[in-house]
Image 1 (spheres, rainbow, N blue to C red):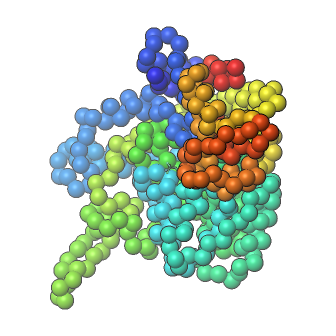
Image 2 (tube, helix red, strand yellow):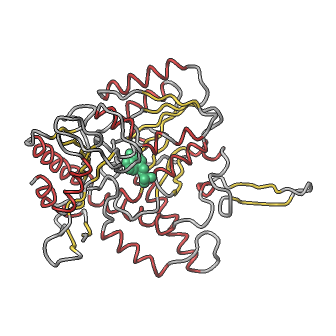
Image 3 (cartoon, rainbow, N blue to C red):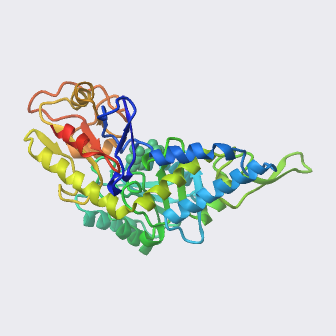
Length: 426
Ligand code: PMP
């Protein structure tokens, strides 16, 4: 049983198009932080692309040219959505994980990387894959101010350095808390470092303006931004991306290839986003992301944020009425956040609790460590469980009074109807 959500109810349209019953929605998907339901409008736009379907960039035919235009227009739509500067490039990737791995691969030799231990593994780990990068892990801060101070101290302590990068999330996928991105960017730049924003959880909930935040790169995923799976974005400064070798070698990334007299080959790589988009690109994925960007912009973030804040307040108040529940937060329960709330229930194994919500009440939440083991470990004050999977490891029974070893996460966004929240709180 599932339902397709449309986020525009905020603006008065019908909330749900139930697929299974003609009436009430039968399943409450409260796992937007993992993947938000793609908008009906995005599905419609994607279906509307079908008549123009053709290979991009290299085809001489009419459909290829149209398709190329639609693909490149999608890039411009994303650039507008993110408030990109003239010199920025928008690279289409598979996901946030892919975007950050691309950036990691493109960093200049010996770049010093600063990253908080609280990051999602997608922004915590890509830097580990290159032995020449010097990674500094920063302890979890307990206030946004402390985050900035911690970063500033770490940057100052290691000066002088050559190229340096700070990687930070805009909104936590565990606590939903907003991070002081503008202040962190200012600190990074004051010390000659660059900064990449992991906007996987922020972009679906708040406007992200790369120039206004003054960050160097932004990464996000389509499937969390109400588009279907399979596409993501890395947008930002072109220089390091264009000085590095291509992320994948192949057709599309190469402009000219010729045999050399000594028998080898000389390759001239593109200096546009195509440099990192070798192979036939995911045109439909890019088109879907652009469609979602347009839908969110037209719906208006003011209305979406106001509606989401209402839901957050209701969930927080409802959970506060249950004495066994502890909400997880770094910056305190009143800290600004998006619709992502993790908690533990005393005396309950989180996995069993989540399974019961699904099986008995038709509510889909997530349990586990949320691909952020160090953060969840800090929040729970415990060791993460073996086997330490991203998702939901089989938990040992937590006896009453014992600390939980993993957590439950409820997350929602545009299009979440009151009824889903009511059912969850009931
Ligand atoms: N960063 C954050 C903050 C996330 O929440 C996620 C997804 N849970 C990612 C990165 C990775 O996104 P993806 O799985 O789409 O690559």
